[in-house]
Image (cartoon, rainbow, N blue to C red; front, side):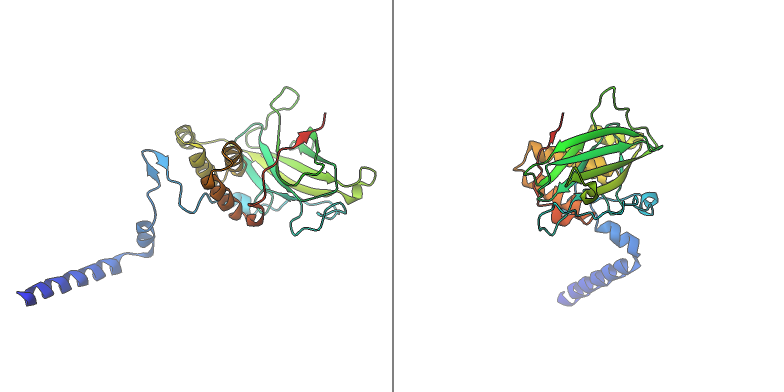
Length: 260
């Protein structure tokens, strides 16, 4: 009886090995992946949200910077300089007609900053001055939804500039970040998923579908509402790390004061 049992066990082991050997690489990968949906809702992976930039955006070159240093004379000694929270090529997508942009502001002696937005023809459609005295951390700049500012149009790209003004009498010392935002339209399938999703799930949906601005804005709002939530904190670090901004992830999100 012992001999028969041992034979059956050995036969079972061989069968398992043969089965594994017949699986190709893609099948093995699927076996190790979580189910993408449960009851129509996406699963947030344990590693946190990761941004996947659309292929057509990856090859887009970043906007040409003016002939000025990114770090001007008013920055304090810091390893981190003025940085837009964007993919490496400063190209981001949004589904919002009035999106929010985020920047890391290093410790600086400057007292003011300026944000501008230009339409595809190069016309300035929005300009906002900000008071940044004694301010350091991640700041958000939102485009106001009012009659004086036209909404972003689907399928069009807009240029933005964020400038820290080191010396109002000598603008050659300005610290500048420049980038592009493109308004896109959601598919019916993605809209349906978003309607059923909580803030954390929304962040994952936006990030996986290459919609950077809204992934970041959604997660930033969740962190402001629940600053002590360690899950949102970990998600924030994961999302920024996915665009090589891991160093900035631990910096605080701070409010700014628009100038009249």
